[in-house]
Each structure stands twice: as C-alpha cells, then as structure tokens.
Image (cartoon, rainbow over the protein chains, first blue to last red):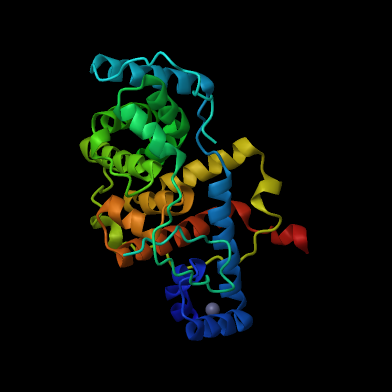
Length: 94
Length: 223
Ligand SMILES: [Zn+2]
C-alpha cells in the first residue's frame, strides 16, 4: 500500500467501515509512513476543532427574535391554539 | 434495510463492531410526543421543538450559505415549512434530521438564487482536486485550542470553511459538524453514498491543508 492507496481509504478508515484485512494494511502503512500518520492526526484534529467550536454566534436576542417570528407565522396560519393545561411544559428538552 | 447509526470519527484504530440490529429499536424519542402534540395544534409543544433545534438549523444554514441574514431567514422558513408539513413527518427519521433536510434544501435554493461566481450545483464542483492532495506534513502542536482564543479560533474556522466549494462545505457540515450519517447526508443532498464519501474526503483534506497554515508547529520555536 502506498500513500495514494492509503488516502483513498482514509474516509472508510475514519468511519470505521473497513474490512479487517484492509485495516491491517492501513495500519502497516501508518507504521512506516510519517506523512500519512500526520495526515490522519491533523485530519482528526480538523474535524474535532470544527465540532467543538461554536463558529457562529447565536445570541439569546437572535434566538428570541427568530422564535417569536416563527410562532407568529404559525399562529397566523390558524392551525395553532394555546392549550390551557401547560403544566407538562418543561423549559428544556434534554 | 437497517439504517446505520452515525459513524463516529473518533475511533479509527479498531473497526466498529458490527452490531447487527435485527429489529428497529422500540425506544421512542421524546420528540415524537412533542410532534404529536404540535400536530394537534399545541403551541407550547411546537415552540419547544423550535427552541430545541433553532441553533442547529441556524448553524447549518449559515455554514452552507455563508451569510448571516440568509441564515436568519432560512431558520424562520424551515420551522414554518416544517409546521405546515408536520403531517408528512412520519417518524422514520429523527425530527432533527428531517429539519436539517429542509434546511439544506432552503439553503441550496438561496445559494442558487444568489448566483455567486462560484458554482453552486451539487454536481459541478466535484472535479476540483485542487488542494485535496496533502502537501503540508507538519504536526499540529500544541492543539489549536491551546494556541488560540475561542474567538480567534472561530474566526479562523469561519474563514477557512468559507473557502471550500459549496458542495464540499455542505457535505462536511452535515457529516462532520451536524453528525448525520453518510446515508442521511446522501439522502439530504440527493447524492449517492460513494459521492458523499468522495466529497467528504476532499473536504476534510482541503480544510486540513488550509488550517495547517495556522496550526502547524512552528519549526523555529521547536528547535
Ligand atoms: Zn503514506
């Protein structure tokens, strides 16, 4: 396996969708090729840094404004009604 | 056909164990009850769903369109459309995935309307192999989070992803940021699974290459 072959398998390798025989080859290549090892490590960090960062601010003010606008439009469509019993309504869903 | 759960990119060293699920899990997602109530016209239930997913929908729209005003409009439109089409939601996918699919459609429509110089067709920007071949083999030390403040990091990440062709950016956003599975991403974009994989690979490699300019270990400092 050379570096080009390795790169072609990178996505499957990251996603854990790779058959054992091929995985052994991939690991063997990684053991001998520092460049590909760095590519794996820095690609992983690329994904992690995007996942971990809140790249776009979503302030409370915006959240409230958007939600109010949405609810307004939905109400105007005439299909919503306020249910009298609201006891089961928790502030968060988690 | 069993839908695969979202593959996680965290554990590449061992193959993911094949958990063969013979029957769909009977576990009911809390959203199902909220959706049922919303279908019946319950304002509070629908508002709760908006509250839960507005941030994710906004983020997805902004990643794809790269425009804050568009993202605001799209977020509103997505929830309003979802509300109107609530009866069509059959619960075959997660409610959040269903919303993301609507958001992707709306975002791509905006991009097409805007007709920027870059092509926005999901099929056209595939041929660019430029930047997908790794050239920078410097290690990233220390980790980016240790070298930059949150706001500096956010700025770098925004600038970098904005430079990707929309088709790559969208696949990366759905798959790696919003954690959709390859199959879900393919369905949301009307692409084949191999096409998603190929774009994802190139998107990841291009981002890696561009980020390396910021995050690479400084040779002078380390010697
Ligand atoms: Zn190699």
